[in-house]
Amino acid sequence: MVGGGLAGLVVATEVAVRGKRVLLLEQEPYLGGQAFWSFGGLFLVNSPEQRRLGIRDSLELARQDWFGSAGYDRPEDAWGRRFAEAYLEFAASEKRAWLRALGVRFFPVVGWAERGGGLATGHGNSVPRFHIVWGTGPGLLEPFLRRLDSLEEKGLVRVLLRHRVEEVLVEGGRAVGVAGVVLEPDPSPRGAPKSRKAIGEFRFLAQAVVLATGGIGANLDLVRRYWPKYLGRPPERLLSGVPDHVDGSGILAAGKAGAHLVNLDRMWHYPEGVENHTPIWSRHGIRILPGPSALWVDATGRRLPPPLFPGFDALETLRYLRGAGFDWSWFVLNLRILKKEFALSGSEQNPDLTGKSLVQVLRNRLFGPPAPVKAFLERGKDFVVAGNLSELMRKMDALAPGVLDPARLEKEVKARDLEFLNPFAKDSQVLALRGFRRYLGDRLFRVAPPAPILDPKGGPLVAVRLWTLTRKTLGGIQTDLEGRALTPAGNPLPGLFAAGEAAGFGGGGVHGYKALEGTFLGGCLFSGLQAAKGVLKGLE
Ligand SMILES: Cc1cc2nc3c(=O)[nH]c(=O)nc-3n(C[C@H](O)[C@H](O)[C@H](O)COP(=O)(O)OP(=O)(O)OC[C@H]3O[C@@H](n4cnc5c(N)ncnc54)[C@H](O)[C@@H]3O)c2cc1C
Image (cartoon, rainbow, N blue to C red; front, side):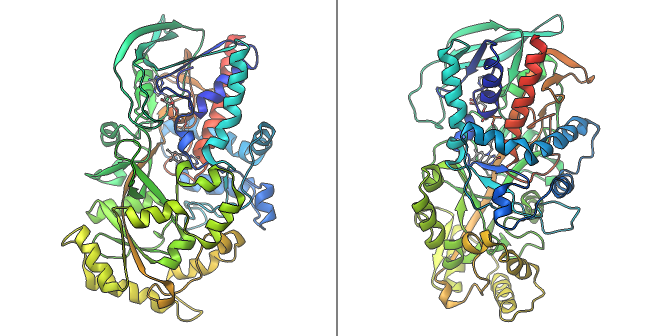
């Protein structure tokens, strides 16, 4: 088992619990991978949490949303598509019960990510489906780590940290093991870039090799090399939304061993990244999980067209902004909107949910902003605050001199503000905001009462400069439904398996072009379970 992130932990524990011996190799000095940092949002369909909030979801609706977002259009999508069908069934049936049996619990208010905003057959979630794990990413990891510990005590699992796999050993067309280097100890904190200095070598033979090494998001050379053509030119400046270990080494090793690498030009990056004021990893950016009310304008102050409002369609917005010619864009809002709507992705940015404190969660969501958002407001390089629009625009210009057209921005702000003044409107964002507030979860926690930005009761004005933030790799090692790595000819490469982000979350690209969110951790769980089944079958 190569890689001790969520997918690796699922495979290792599922295989070992059936009495097979597992050797888990991990290059970092700890287990957990990206899931440790994750917000813990999980895609579930027709859950009790949804039903309690009056959301009527169904497998049929979820399938319509998924396929409308995926846009599969390549022959190599065949396995991703099959994975998607199976994953949707899982998300609508045993996923929640399985997790609950393991001890995972959910925050009762379901979030609405990727709202889409186009046609029924297009991208986006028709209903809220983003279920936040109580305890965020660490809360999701907890039961798997506990299980691993007990299997280690029984002698069924052996974990070797600081072991970096560099090669999959192939003999007679079969993967027979892995080789790599032992890395020197590095006491720096979790997530910080780690030394890659080798102090030894290793070579292990096994009946099955499973790669669950994550994607390429922190390897900006690879991100640029495979940058999707449909997104235009890659930005000069990219922030990284993932720790340095997300370097693509496992995917490359699989390719060298003869596995088919597919859809590497499909990536899930965010246009709402801000530079972390206290970086942990290289070029550390944080994603704003925006509520839908902020006015979104490009670097010159021109408003983005519908449906490119905050939280509607991440990739389409990124595509539009790449065409707009600058590496950054702006949210313009006021403090009242920020208090209600701004959240930051990541376990460390949500100590209330991560620490499982209901009192803190309620206080932050009802009377916000939470301390991490406040810290960005005060110390974030990309945030400016002002008492009036002229001053705000002067401060925006000081951050990026000579690009903003103040007359254009003023016109955009005032024009949208006018639309709030009566119950009718033609502005799609204003109409959408009124619609969202019919959902109790949004009204309570997520969507500010629709009102002009320049309303004096809205408090000081805020502008946030946004950058592209790399995050997920939607392609990778092509596998079949049992996680068996396939060759370019479409046959299984005997002995080699892949799961999680390294396998495009299943099949080499379960998402197609776009994701509905919460489907990455979920994709690791499901592709991990599938790969474990494949490994066990192969060992019989
Ligand atoms: C801040 C943040 C927030 C997120 N929020 C969400 C969310 O709310 N919902 C959601 O669905 N997803 C979310 N994600 C995405 C999700 O966390 C990841 O896609 C998922 O955890 C990937 O798991 P994995 O096991 O496939 O890979 P990883 O977590 O990347 O684990 C791979 C492991 O393999 C090790 N490794 C890599 N190469 C080698 C090698 N050559 N030799 C040995 N070891 C190696 C790495 O060190 C790492 O520990 C978030 C991610 C981040 C960073």
